[in-house]
Length: 233
Image (tube, rainbow, N blue to C red; front, side):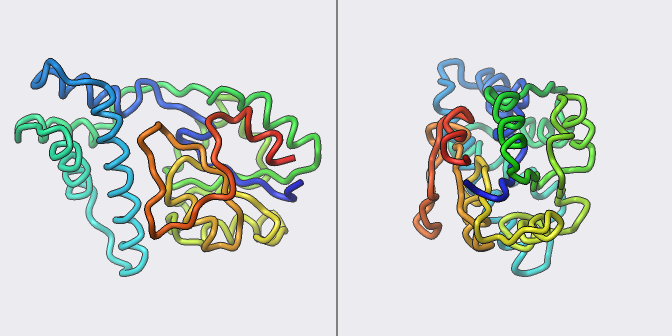
């Protein structure tokens, strides 16, 4: 049994509805009526990989891309993948920037897994590249109190895959990284965990997500949080 389990938020504990891919499909299908949702899910996987590489580059150089340019680049990934025109690409960039209206849902299995881990004495924490407002979402969804430590990138100035953000969480919990595990949906979550000396449980956001060659394979790959129980305990 692990002494400590740290979790990502989006696509791990919580789901945004509509999802980013669903919103992209809604917009892109206006230009390409025969577009398939699978095409958008593939583009989503490509955009997430670009974002992981970009944040890693920013961590290494200390130079952050401004928000507008960042969102334009994300939109460009979708545009190239889906062969969208310039007008649709611009609309995508605007969509990402305006924080589209969304609701959160608990990832299936969250409500069952967290009290089980807590009851077995596993220290629980959250580490997320996110904004401070997500704390209220966690409280509203009724899961914030399960976690002894919540580390948000915006608040601490550290961004995955920088291993220091996981190391900080373990320090706050009073446990070593060795013997701890990180559960996340992104390939760079796996990289972050391994760089911090932790094991990784990977819950890919969709079936098109892949671990790049430069990232070592996670110790476990799961398709639902229900599968995590027998791994974490």
